[in-house]
Amino acid sequence: MGTITSLMDIAQQALRANQEALNVTGNNVANQNTAGYTRQVVSFQSVDAVTLSGGTYGSGVMASATSQRDRVLEQQVQQQTQTQAQSGALESALQKIQNIFGLSSTTSSASSTVLGTAIDSFFSSLSSLAGNPSDTATRQSVLTAANTLAAAFNSASNQLTQVSTSLNQQVIGDVSQVNSLTKTIASLNTQITALSPNADAGTLEDQRQQAIAQLSKLVGLDQISTENNGITLTTSGGAVLVSGSQAFALSTTPVGGTTHILAGVGGQDVTSNLAGGDLGGVLLARDHQLPSYQSALDSLAFAVGTRVNQQNALGVDGNGNPGAALFSLPPVPIGAAALIQVATANPKAVAAAGTGEGSAGNTNASALANLSTANLVNGQTALGYFASFLGQIGSDTAAAATNNSAQQTTLTQLTTQRDSLSGVSLDQEASNLTQYQRAYQAASQVFNIANSIMASAINLGVQTAVN
Image: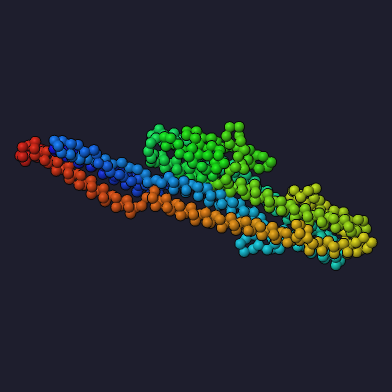
């Protein structure tokens, strides 16, 4: 049968188990605001029973703490974090581009923008010239408007280039952060494998998951669980970032004016294979959206400059000579917006007269002014094409904002679902404290009773001050 000693031992185990439970609960409360902390719960297990003299007796209790972790849900949060970070980075880049042209949610008219106003003013100055072709001041106004137009094209193109440069710097910064986090994750892999290869690693695993969550904001990841509680991480394109205790750093290099990302032995260019996270959004904006906008702007500048030059060449300038080019342009549209300039400072270079009219004619000035309603670019007028261009930027930005909002909503839902399992609830912890406190007090009472019985037995029932 059980003995007084075994009763005292059982009470002692109960005290230790409930002390452990109180410690775990206190730790949960202390870490309620710690980023990445996963709530721990205590599970109690009875110690194997013993059989004495034909009777079976319990041998006490054991307590152990485990983290409330759902690995599938954690990976869903990580994947959604990557998607939301990409859409957020793309929206931010597109808003910068939208700001270049003075667009907003309430203002999208081409005529209200700097470049749209410059286009309109240039053709208006040609209309004024048609009404007064001999006036030097009116001719000078045409050159002034032409210079304003060229400067507007130059400014818009340069600002697009600045956005691209800014995105290149963002790529470099993101890669640096990725490399720092992969080193941290590899180091935590080593510690977890050494200390807890077959079970949840508690705080160390919280730290690793927090680092992976931060990494997910930067780049798209695939996560693979390995033996000994390790993790292998690769980019969404398959480049290994972490394998066990090893971290494989990314690097950057300039290629054709843009920053490319290299990975693996020999520095394989993985730029086009990266998606997800801030890097994915930045690369999408820099390598796909920006080039298309720059190309459209170049096409507009080249078309306007070329058609004006062609029409001016058909007329007679103020000196009675055949008209020359008013704009200097590259031979092809590429780079036209950045390079377009007014080719002359002489107001008489504007060929207002038609052939045979003499220098005081206005036929060619009317033809130049009429280019405002001619289909210059892709079957559209200059302002019509520019309006379509702005509409595309506005549409792309609005779509990115809508997508980012939807992705954020989904991420919030998943995060709430995870936190309901893994986060600390003060109400629950307060209830647990009360429960474990009472259990501890009860175990203490059992120990005191066993101690009194033992003292009575030793003293043969005689009351004594010595227990």
